[in-house]
Image (cartoon, helix red, strand yellow):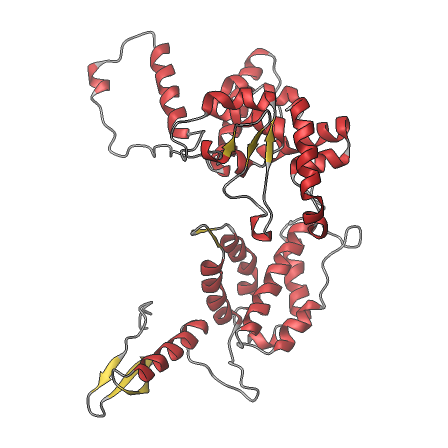
Length: 403
């Protein structure tokens, strides 16, 4: 069986005729006189269509659509997703999420013609999601990702528009109307459980925890803080993240930092304005220095000069949401080992997103729903622009009192 090459077939000269030629799937396509702009344009067109079909030639049927299998359609769609779902030049998590969603589709219907995949097939696929133990929201999300793949294929004229229209008729599972597990709501963490990890995490991680508790910012917003993004000229500091969750909607995220948040943040401000405030590499240096200081016996020369054949991966300069959460998980495990030794009990696991709910609960209780919505940056898309100025004023007033 020939090994497939991912190299794009080249534009070549066919010497007997003087024409340009390209070979796709073993078939020669003549493009016109070699070296002319017209032949180059024809080459670009044919290659683009060939790539969009997952490196295969179209097989037109009665309505002009290609007879793609679901697998062939997904190859083209995943290539599109890898290029489309990027942010600031970096891939987002969405392509990985899409691949997880389409895994069952490939297993059950990979060899089915994409034009023949209809509502019954989608419902059967959805039931496989339910059977795998996904919660209702997860099932609906994966089902929507499948619909989006077929919608994209219609937009590329790979399958008839009737396929996507038919799949749209399959509604999402509703609460209480389907035999499917409901997800547990994200709840605040009791402050005692948060405080318990303080001795077992780095100074950097504890500062981020405190800032989240005070301001309600998202994990992604706290790990990416830089001095250049913080306006310290007023009584209330203003942090405008370079990147945030809803920026693709054209919204600006403003986080107000009151006296307590300022006191937490002040030691971390840097003269290197674009450097991250919280660095796992710096935390690692501090941890190792503390371990050396705590040694009761000197390091032997044989140990000092020893090098590892496979040294461990060194921490980076910037925390990610994943590494931040991992550091908290590690701190909880260490705290539980200490508690088990002293008191025979332990604290439950919690994660950084819950700290945002801590702030929301406190703000709503003390200042009302509108204040909590303003500080956390929540709003309906319809009224975003109407309430933007009001939200900023309300948020600054509230955080001046408590944050």
